[in-house]
Image (cartoon, rainbow, N blue to C red; front, side):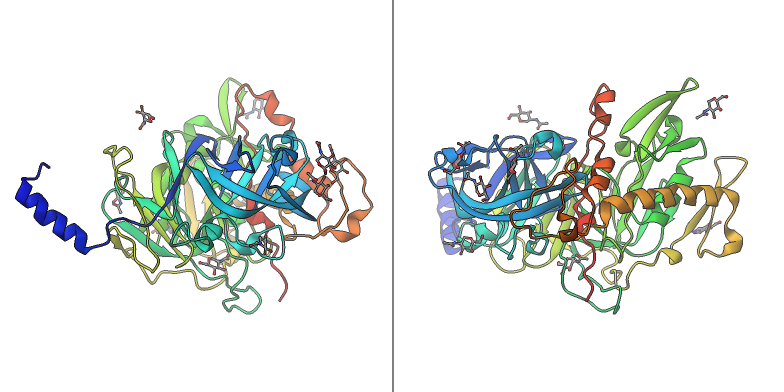
Length: 504
Ligand SMILES: *[C@@H]1O[C@H](CO)[C@@H](O)[C@H](O)[C@H]1NC(C)=O
Ligand SMILES: *[C@@H]1O[C@H](CO)[C@@H](O)[C@H](O)[C@H]1NC(C)=O
Ligand SMILES: *[C@@H]1O[C@H](CO)[C@@H](O)[C@H](O)[C@H]1NC(C)=O
Ligand SMILES: *[C@@H]1O[C@H](CO)[C@@H](O)[C@H](O)[C@H]1NC(C)=O
Ligand SMILES: *[C@@H]1O[C@H](CO)[C@@H](O)[C@H](O)[C@H]1NC(C)=O
Ligand SMILES: *[C@@H]1O[C@H](CO)[C@@H](O)[C@H](O)[C@H]1NC(C)=O
Ligand SMILES: *[C@@H]1O[C@H](CO)[C@@H](O)[C@H](O)[C@H]1NC(C)=O
Ligand SMILES: *[C@@H]1O[C@H](CO)[C@@H](O)[C@H](O)[C@H]1NC(C)=O
Ligand SMILES: *[C@@H]1O[C@H](CO)[C@@H](O)[C@H](O)[C@H]1NC(C)=O
């Protein structure tokens, strides 16, 4: 709009009456290659660019590998020499030491005293990454005692006004903005969904720890087929490209996909005739806001058997209250929905992306307080929040018809309703569970001082840890992906599995 001079003056007066600028915010580009890689973060003096570093909402520490980051080349590098164990979903436990340095962007200084972990394990043992930039809650830090991680440090050092970030996860030109949002990128209002307090499976009361950014999912469907109708807590893990629901939900999903399938429990996949997978959508009802993605996004392997193409879906599950507090939704969702993560107010916001490309217009900083400078709305079912610990036995059960790809459901599980096909489905998941348990029954963090072990070393430090590294490394199977032409099996961090519930 072109303003006439008088109108301009009036407008100018109006502008003067309100704050002239939004608070500062900091944007970093994201490159999507199965996982999101954060660009243009620099560490040290002179600044070293952090290459091949994933953005992970499922963990909290910045962890870097040598020699990609060179501590000795930074004059401001500070080594505490404290050592900690890092445990991520598909990465065997490893040792890092705690350090700190100056973090910057191409535009200059960002924060002082950024705490991070340095490890000398090889990139191969780190799923091919050179670093992980965790932006989760402080309570899931490996490095102890609790410290202010990057988003919190930006606020503490007055760089942003609210501990909040927003993710444009679209496949092209994605970005994360710390302290701000991109008002031009979504349609309509942002739907505000509360993050839910942890509920202790022991007491049934809110327990208030083991924080992950989480929200209620009321129902999950594959197409029109309900595969979960029990309120469940989920988080979206930008560092995971797998769907890790409770056991019964994965079993239901597998029944709902169809009977032409086989499982390879060594690989940790169930393979389905590709015809049964194509064109189907998984949808998640988040208090009335629908999140969905194509089922084929879950495919991580392909096999030709008897002239038919079968596609492999990983058998990842969680046992809520036992080895996890929440299920995990894969990072694909970020490709389809704009998200705002307001840690300070414990709110998530979701919106459909706008079909109109706004370019970089409308990126605005968010002030302290509780409101956002854009329209927001409550979800359609604001009261439908997770309030009791997920109970697998109350989940809906899909039963495959023995004669066709049909299915029926039951709302409760009784012995009589277990048909052969259900047994088969449950068999798949109980194997899953067994295998999964090896990778999930881990303690949050172990503080190890001067003890180093690897999956291949038969270290004597077993008494100081609660999990056996050899097991995890079996699950990691780093050699497997090289069999496929394309890296179809991307091993990602599924950090929820770090949450062995502490006994209270
Ligand atoms: C880095 O500096 C430390 C302390 O001075 C030294 O022990 C270490 O050998 C150096 N590492 C390299 C790769 O130069
Ligand atoms: C930092 O301390 C750890 C633990 O003592 C040590 O292994 C590492 O080499 C040190 N790093 C540098 C760059 O001095
Ligand atoms: C730097 O951060 C550490 C926590 O990682 C904290 O203990 C220390 O006090 C901080 N130093 C300064 C100067 O703020
Ligand atoms: C990594 O560092 C540890 C000490 O923290 C050392 O024992 C080990 O040999 C190093 N490994 C490699 C591959 O440099
Ligand atoms: C991504 O950004 C580049 C310029 O940086 C632009 O040419 C291109 O059209 C953008 N792509 C999309 C899908 O927005
Ligand atoms: C979910 O997030 C809230 C913070 O918004 C936190 O208090 C709670 O402990 C988290 N729940 C779990 C299970 O991590
Ligand atoms: C179970 O199937 C019946 C119809 O047979 C349907 O009305 C009901 O909504 C289904 N329930 C679930 C949880 O899928
Ligand atoms: C492939 O054919 C063989 C021999 O007929 C049969 O045993 C096997 O079950 C078939 N595999 C699949 C996945 O259909
Ligand atoms: C998001 O887009 C879908 C169509 O793709 C539409 O059905 C849904 O109502 C939209 N949600 C909101 C909150 O605008």
